[in-house]
Length: 265
Image (cartoon, rainbow, N blue to C red; front, side, top):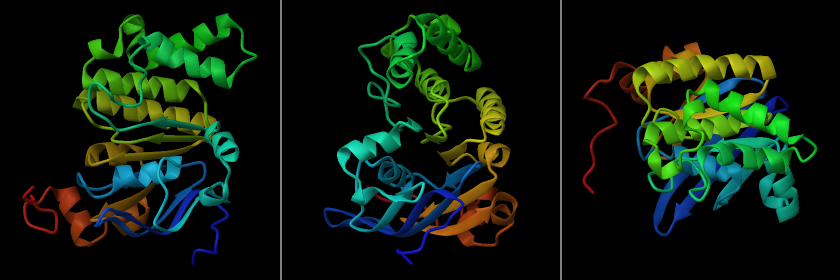
């Protein structure tokens, strides 16, 4: 299976295993993220969503298995080639204050959006960089916070600032980890509508991780559900949401009984 490639996949994980010390955090993950659509990776906290994203970004490498971006096996790329692949990606990382979402804490909100634009678009005029930066901040409701420092923001505002940065880059692959973290229900619904509109206009590939079912229903064309390091269901969104698989049913219905339980530390 590791030798096969899905031609319509922007992102593909094949039999990915990750061991951290003596703990297996990914246990044979198979994931296809179709090109030009929004895929939601769903699962409870600790299921393996962020570790999966870190493999896709190339921050960590699998103990076994293959990770491909646009058909390229990341393990076979040089650092230079990996950086070239990343130039067509925009990523919002998970995190907690004061190191949340991959923001640079020495830069204000404006510069967190503008600096990557200057690097990725060196031929753009300062006026165009300013216009795109402010428009991106306006879209996520942070235009009035442009001069704020990240440590002055709430966790939800920091997440929105990171989303503004990702959208400004107009990348063909956008990855947003822990999408719903710190964002209230109304703003989350508004962001869902915004992301869908931008994705459709750009025909980009979005991968969004979340454990919020309302967000997933608003966003997803495709869904993959991860539990204890394994993909337990995947496919077109409505098909997965209609699944009788125990983890999926528990997530959708919010049931107390089922495979997802509180664990002792």
